[in-house]
Image (cartoon, rainbow, N blue to C red):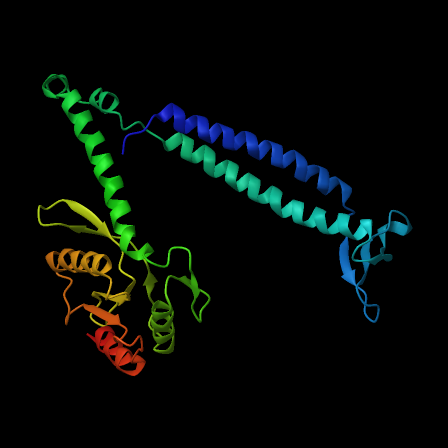
Length: 280
């Protein structure tokens, strides 16, 4: 993917500037905190004391009563502790950003061409190659939009919560999550797959669920609703066609679970099919 290296570096520099601002704020919070260990008082609900070394008496440990959790001294110590952890993260982010900046290289055609031998540079049609790359960028972006079309319909703004806390699009998918959990089968939800279409072009599709079978093959599960909706059903058939071209086939490594016409679900049968897929 082509990009302007200077723009990338500018974004990283802005990020580093933001880290500097955050660092100053956190250091101020650290300075407001008192050194020592905050202790919750036994028998006195929601009150705290600070255990620290005395500035007198040879630096012996002493305990100072502070008061409730809402007292300014208590809040200052808690914020200082949080700020210290934040400063550690800032330093890690700064180091990671510097490392990334050092490794960023241009993918512009003319920049890479400079490293080629002279004969190759003269024979390279830079304009045609740039046009091809830009065209493919647009195609790949369109593929990503198409890949998400099926999975966002019709529950785009209606997330359901599965038993393991995962947000899913439909109640049927939540049931499949529960079945996989009961069967103790690890899975990936809505993971993107790079596949090929009839013309050999790379396209993207995101199966509802992806598992690894006993023979270390990838297995796929689709939880399909709205079978009576013609547009939705045609979109699903297109997904099946792409799967078939890539050797993802019903009855082999692909399982489709859908509600009955009266909107009921046979979870017992579905679990048996999932077990069979996982064991294959």
